[in-house]
Length: 138
Image (cartoon, rainbow, N blue to C red):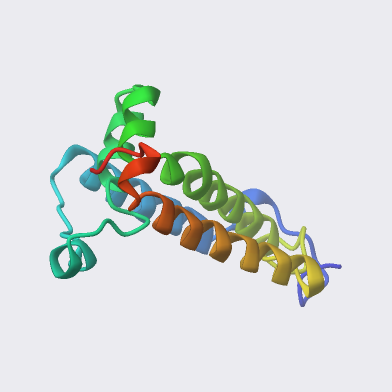
């Protein structure tokens, strides 16, 4: 399927995707370098890590090309969140230029993907707060 107009536009015609990439890169660099700090309200309230605790430090480690440190800070962010964000940005660019009908899979595939991401997130949330499992607390 094509965009609503039925016309496939060139990549340089995109407007939303480059803006999202720019804001995302700037925010990621600010978070990863420690310029911008966002305290975790869940950790402050409960003393337990949320699924994304350590994500900023993991991003900083990735910016320093230190994969093992990034995985130590938050393996979920490195193995799941970063690839999903990159895939969504590519899909958004394809949708915006008329090369795809939607930016997220529709129907059963889309629901399965959303539920899978939710289950993975909750699973990681539980596992990382079990001290016996050996997942280091960040």
